[in-house]
Structures are given as C-alpha cells and as structure tokens.
Length: 415
Image (cartoon, rainbow, N blue to C red; front, side, top):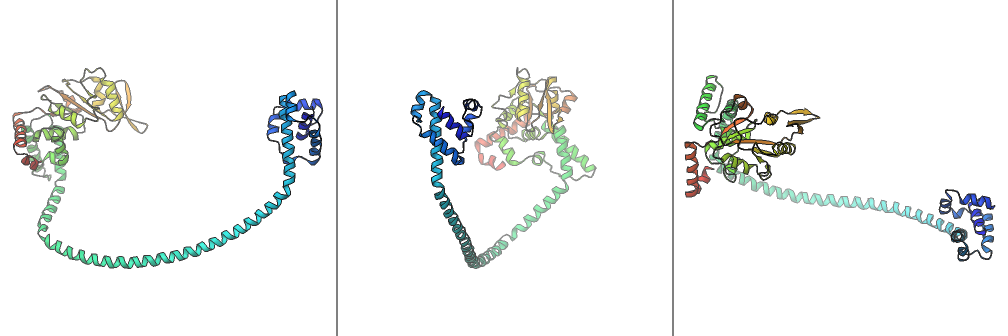
C-alpha cells in the first residue's frame, strides 16, 4: 500500500484505497507511467514521496517478494524520484551550459558571416583568374584556328581542283533526280497496279501488263519512268540481298518481285507455292516472330484459333500452310482486317474472342496447289502471289547457282 500510495502521489491521485484501485483499473494506467514527466514533479510532492521511500522495506527486492507488480512499481518510484533529484541538482549547471552554448552559437554565426564574406572574395578572385586563363586559352585557340584554316584553305583549293571532273557527274545526278520527281506520280500508279493485280501471273504476263499500263499512261500524258522497275521502286538493295543471301529466296527477278509483293502489300499474302520455296523463305525471314515455327500451322491444326489469337495480341507472325481453294469462315475477320476501334485502340474478332490488335501482327498463307481456282471475292481480300517456278525462272535460278559456284565474284558484282 505504501508503494501504491507513492505512485498515486506522483500521478497526482488520491491515496485512499478506493481511489488507488480505481486508478489501477484505468485503461491508460500503463501509458501514464510510461509517459510520466519526472522533471514536472512539485517540491511538496517530492518531499512526501521521499518520506515514503525512506520507510523501511521500500526496496524493489523486498517488495517484489510480496508482489512482483508492486516491486516493479517500487523500482519505478525510486527511479522517478532519483531522476527528479538529479535534474534539480543539474538545473543550474545546465542553465550555465546553455548560456555558454548561446555565446558559442553567436560566435559561430559571426564566424559563418566572416567565412561567407571571405568565400565571396575568394570566388571573385577565382572568377578573375578563370577569365584570365580563358582569355589566354582563347588567344592560343585563335592562333591554332588561324593555322588550321590556312591549311584547310590550301587543301580545299587542291580538292576543288582535283574534283573539277566530278561536276558533270553531279549535274547528271541532279538531272536524274529531277526527272524521277517528275515521273513520281506515274511510277506510283504503276507500282500500285503491280501490287494490286500482277501477283497471280507469270513473269511474262507481268511484263505484258506493265507494258500495257505504260502505254495507257503515255496515252493519258502522265509522266512515268520508261525503264520503271517494280523491285527498285518499292525495295532497298540491302533488303533484297538479305532475302536472296541468308534467307534463301531464289535469286531470280520473278522471285524477288514476289518477295516485294509479299512484304509490301496491304492485304495478307496468299502464296501459290507448289515447290515450297516461298514457305521456306518466309520461315527464315520471320523465324523469331514465328516462334521457331510454333506458329507455322495447317488449317486442320487443333489450336489454330488460339494460336492466331495469341499472335494478334502480341504482334507475332502466323504462317498458314497447305490451304485449299477455300478458307475457314472463322478466319474471315483476320483475313479482312476487320478492325474495331474501341477505347483508343484497335480490336479484332478471332473466332468468338475480341482481341486487342497489335500493329506488328503478320499473317501469311501458302498453298501447294499448282493452279488453284480462287473466287473473285477471295482475290479481293488477299494478295495472291504466284511463286510457281516456270521454265524461265528455273533457268535464271540455275544460272545463278552455277555462277555462284564457278565465279562468285560475278554474283557479288551483280548483288
């Protein structure tokens, strides 16, 4: 009871037993002890608690034998009183120390002001030194530049004199560029017509078509290049060399035209490929996007629609091989590119699923049929490309192979 009375005196509560029990049962009693402000103990309370501590048996060990909780409270009382006594003794010393610290802070502020003034002066000196150094460097740089310009002027004079013969070639190039610009509209018409209509036909018939179109353009007085070449107009030489080199496209003009038709048409290509050359080229060209041939499928593939759905979503390529003269109606939306604009994105229906359309998605079709009969409706939906090897194309392919084996320098020069 003496311990609890001392606790209550410190907390400012009554020391009657009923009051002690009520305070002990309070929900925040533990927090009151933890958050107790010892320095705020009044002098009268301190004297009363000191009298209680002075009584015999007011020791944590002795009290703890009777009640462990009371022993802890006894230890708390003694620690709190000891803290207050120490604080009372040290207050004058702390006051003097704080006064000294204030003096030190003032001196430090004065020192800081002085250092800042010194730093400003040093900065001005450094700036003047920097400008002086820059002026010296600029002077040296101007001297060097003067010497370099004199040397360049001498070299330029020699170069101009040495390239005087190039003037004629440059004038010819400028004239050719101007002529190409004038012929651009007609050449675009020829290229568009070739993309739209020439795919199903043989090399000879394509030549006849282009000749007829040129005659019509001449009749309409629409400027065009007399030596118009579809491959040169719509492809880069580096790309063609890659097709015919590492990717295995046959190195004849007909096959290269077909390569441009497959890659540059707006409609998905359907390749007539009885010899399988186009299919093998597409597999190599689209190897990574075909997921190492995981997306090379036939119309009877069990996971055809799910795989196409995945390819559409992630921008992969699909090669549908061995198609017949008709296609599965479930592929109609993919073949037609029937895109739906929704939520600022393009969507397409694959089977029963609405899939977000990735603009990198590519869809290739090939058939082994030598002379398939496709309906006019099908011809308007896909770009039919005839890869069937004819006699003239076979001769050119074989000639290329012989030249490559016997005299590779000529083949390199051709490329």
